[in-house]
Every structure is written in C-alpha cells, then in structure tokens.
Image 1 (cartoon, rainbow, N blue to C red):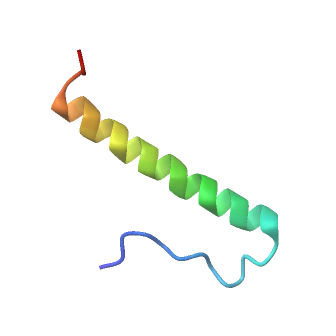
Image 2: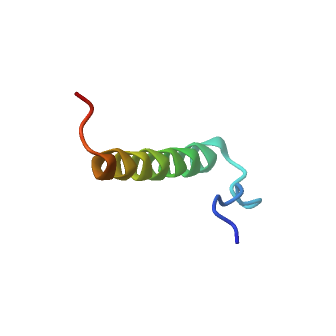
Length: 43
C-alpha cells in the first residue's frame, strides 16, 4: 500500500515537479487539519 506517490519520471521539467510537490504538500496539510479538527481545538 503506497501512501505517498513518488515523483513521476516523466515530470522532468521543474514546473511539473514543483506542482506535484505542492499538491502533495496541500494534501498533507489537509489531512493534518482534519486530524486536528477531530481532536478538537487547542485552547
């Protein structure tokens, strides 16, 4: 079971690689936020 995709070999130019990394980062932040919301606000 692969959770994180590896950078595709066809994404040779830097803009594609940067976009891929940004998407992965956004997904990670989104999942982290969901975990925080489920746990409840930090007060």
